[in-house]
Length: 361
Image 1 (cartoon, one colour):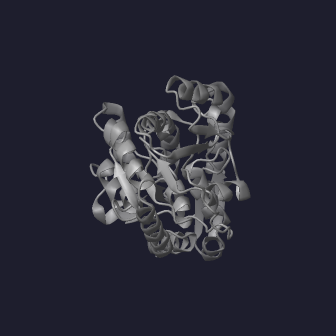
Image 2 (spheres, helix red, strand yellow):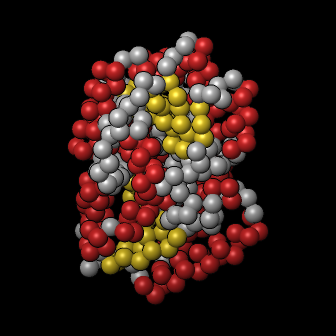
Image 3 (cartoon, helix red, strand yellow):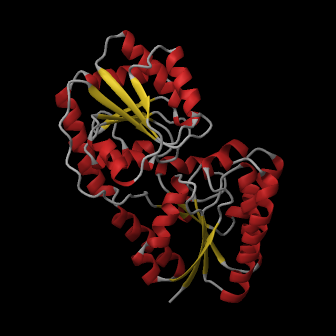
């Protein structure tokens, strides 16, 4: 059985790459197909810690490097899988791991859960480091829409595509709806997730006398609960929105079950796993044409896609769904079918397994 060393992010904190990392680590299929070892790349325990307290994280990082060296020297895996950070300080830290893997002659597989290579590829130092990183390296992307980000360094034949999947929730029946259309935003309270963009769009909907109420759920990030409430007051929509903090398990599922429309106007995502969760509950999704999201949300079929940061465009699409019950039901049903056909966790595991088997053959 081939040995695979997985170097990836695991929760906490909860974000897309860490969630997928946990799916891989917990996968019976993957762990029964390979002799697996795992190293957690995370140096932060909460969303708030990301990008802060660098001195505190140095020892954690050095420990990670030591673990990598020990695994490469003594366990001798055939493949080293790395969930790499595409740019910035995170990339420079990961490059040290890339260098160790290449020096010790282990086959490298890089899995991109973020983007930004193209933004940095014309920087002299970054360009050199990217050339080294992607030389003789297998790359996994989650969507064909993301190839352009690495096209300078990676040939198409060295790319494999593996769409993320999510496990199906326990069965919670859709709740009986009241007369007010319920909107749901569920993600960390981070500006790049489009929180303020959505609040501004809701102000427009209020001025148009739209019949709605919007619930925001998620952990506080660079936007605090106080910031959120203050912004709602400034926009005079405090009676049309509520922030309920983080929710997990049954509470999270109940939030989907009691909603009519899911809204995720992110400005910087590569996939948006939460869109898949909403589609499980047959919710039409209003999101952005950002990263690989167009692979998930079929514009006009399972929901609507808007340009990131287009406040009025976002309000327009939400309003269409607020005013059309039949369209909401049809798009929601289409979304549920699309999830079942393409984005279950089992489909992700099988595709991911087949890619690794191909690399090790």
